[in-house]
Image (cartoon, rainbow, N blue to C red; front, side):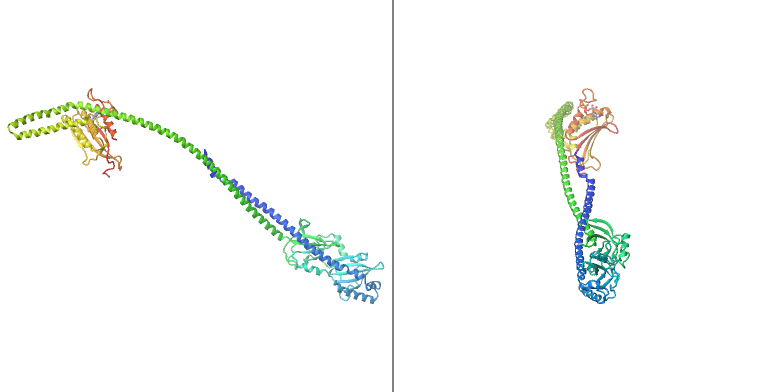
Length: 638
Ligand code: ADP
């Protein structure tokens, strides 16, 4: 139950979360970049506006001081008697000459374009430029607004293009009064070209526009006498009347397009102005700031290039976006770390839980195992007890069977001993006779025969003793043929009597097997006795004994030996084969057998790790094969 949880922790890389994080990351940068651009733009525009304000102030100051400088000139001139005289006596050549000279001298000091005096009809009576080919003397300026203003008793101020000189200039005027009566007008023309000169070097275009919005002074030559906005027809008519911009172009609009506002200033698109001497700027987007010129209806306009603003806005956007990116990366890193720590904690908890569960399972299983183990041990103990009981039963049985066999054999043994005893009797009697007859040689022969017979008898009784002995089994290397010889020494007599042919097939270098010699002899006695029983009525009485060394399987190094006792007797029926080794199974007539022989033989063989099986021979008769462990299982055959 714990495993899927652990898997989830390790396998789940949260791809959805990752996608979301990347999206937020990018979004954050974009938003901050945009805000940064906006902020950068606003800040830079504000700075630019402030700069422009300062610049405009200085231009307004310069212009105002220029205006003031020349504004007083007509008033001073009006005080002069020579000037008054020429107005009072316009036909007096001397008065005209004096006035001309005076005005010429005064203007030399004032450094204006011209200073002149007019009568009330607007006709110039005397002028500072009376000697030049653009002399104003005799000219009629009644149509000029500044004349009309002065004639009406006010001071006039006017910017226009000279109808005589065709040069643009600023005109100042004031009435000439004698005894409170206006008798004429004094005017001064000032060229403002000097004022424009320093502007030409500036980076940003400067414009000075009159009350009608006509640009009359500018650092961009091609904009001169163009209007800020399209002019209404009435204005154009008025301008034509006053010939203000006498020889100028048809006063078309510059083409400034307002695209936005920035405080009091506005953002404008301007037509390209490159190529002009005053401005090399290729910019077309500007911040337009304006400032009125005091005591006039004029205004000064300054166009500030917006490209540096865009540049600094870009820089600000980049810087803030980069900062944001860094901050976000840091935040993501911290978040990720916290999450991975949390994940690790979770994984550890899950692992701990799994481990605890496992441990619990192990405890339970161990307990089960221990129980199973102790059950097994109990069963083993019981089995061992049963086995030892069985084996002691077998021991008893074996002994009983031996005793039974002994009983059976007793007659045979008695018969066997009777013959030598009779022979001994005869031989010893004869020996006495021979000795009495001093036939020592024959007596010696008889004694030797007696000794042989005694040895044979001793062997018979000795074998019987060994057979009857109830000794505990011991498992050791045994030569099977020796056990066979012992068995035959007990049964040989019977086999001979019953005319049973015996053939023994043992290899020359017979390997020792594991077992107890006495017991193996006992097994062989049982098998041989059974064979002899089965051969009782057989026409061909024959017993074959084989000893063969076999490998467990082809190429196996572990080998064993098979000792087979085969006869040519009745053989075994299928039902006999099933029950052969059961105790008390016998086919022999009453008093013939107990049915214990094979059961005992099997018990004995199990005792030293051997086994027995029964079968029928191909040519008739039964065969019993005992499989014995070799004393050296991996032996000389290798
Ligand atoms: P018993 O010899 O006292 O009958 P065994 O256990 O030795 O008891 O033998 C059981 C039975 O197995 C015998 O009664 C006999 O029927 C059968 N049997 C044993 N050996 C042979 C043999 N070589 N040929 C035929 N039958 C045999």
